[in-house]
Length: 125
Image 1 (cartoon, rainbow, N blue to C red):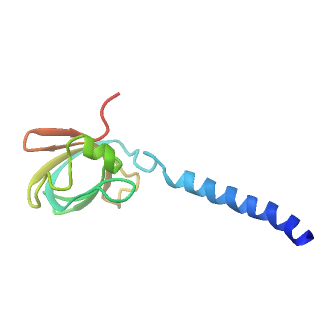
Image 2 (image 1 turned 180 degrees about the horizontal axis):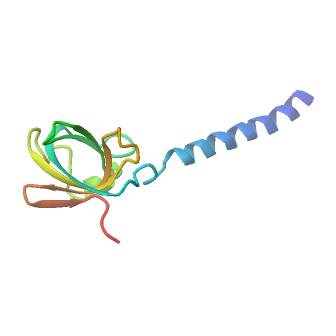
Image 3 (image 1 turned 60 degrees about the vertical axis):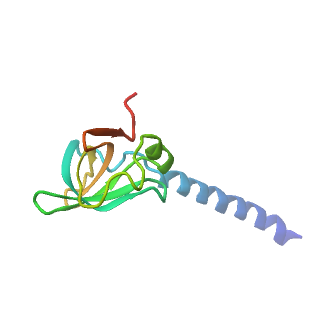
């Protein structure tokens, strides 16, 4: 019986630690605060809406491959940007925030522009 009484607080503590870790895993824009950036490049890896956020990869004029983080899948989809919208090899422009680590070519974007269409994955408030 004493074993059970000791186990319950330990399990509760473990649960609370796990919940705190999960909450901190969704970091919003932290890490992507190095300033506003606009990148134009060719789509190398098309839009994927699986996972917690949509993603794509584009290669800029200097040959650098950029990892692009979009809004969560449903929000990106509501903007009109779907997995089949922009074909591979097409040129897009993205606008958003660059990663603070300048050795990482990564940006979390609020807008994707393709073929004259603007997809505001994070609409202005």
